[in-house]
Image (cartoon, rainbow, N blue to C red; front, side, top):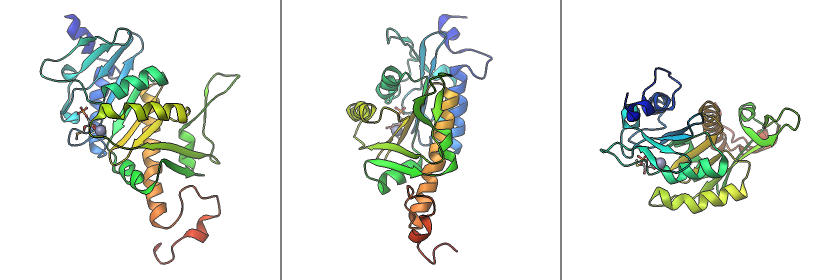
Amino acid sequence: MSLDDVLIRSDDPHHPANLICTLCKQFFHNNWCTGTGGGISIKDSETNRYYLAPSGVQKEQMTPDDLFVMDAQTLEYLRAPELYRPSACTPLFLACYQKKDAGAIIHTHSQNAVMCSLIFGDEFRIANIEQIKALPSGEVDPVTGKPIALSFFDTLKIPIIENMAHEDELIDDLHKTFAEYPDTCAVIVRRHGIFVWGPTIDKVKIFNEAIDYLMELAIKMYKMGIPPDCGIGEEKKHLVRGTDA
Ligand SMILES: CSC[C@@H](O)[C@@H](O)C(=O)COP(=O)(O)O
Ligand SMILES: [Zn+2]
């Protein structure tokens, strides 16, 4: 096998080159990555390489041959398919790798993220919902060294930044949210979608699914007049009568 092949060929379904393609197919069917929008980048921790999708392609139709591979140390491309440019989101993915020590990043154009960005101001908030427990609090257990999840009684807060004409123009606001929300694992981009990151692709997939569930629920609560971050038992006094049949 040539070096080019070695970078992307594996029988292991969990190899980053295979996983990016499999997950993008799944995300297409969730309406998260359609019409070329959205994408995934995964770091291979063993080889210290970033796997990146090409730009402007139907993400659900990608094969490992279409992927870019970058050396995480030198940031040089080890593999760059001639036909393509790397994803426009590459600078944002690199920021998550470098500043958040991410192992993978998922970007979707989820309509739930877009709707929440229209409903909320600078911050998406939802509280006291069981699914919140799938998300990290940012704290680490001093004894086990493992990350501590949010509690049922916590409020999930995700910053919302304004969209720009080009992805790379989001970089300053992304860095600002890293400073202002050191514990967040996601940023919503208004009228655009969401970026979610975490230590491994398995974790990021869980975070993205949990956040999307919570955004969908928040939209339903909002429609019923219930503030998504209202306290337990407070919902009844907000409920818009006659719309809950
Ligand atoms: C439908 S265009 C979407 C892009 O502008 C971008 O936001 C995006 O999500 C994917 O960019 P890409 O360069 O194709 O990886
Ligand atoms: Zn996008």
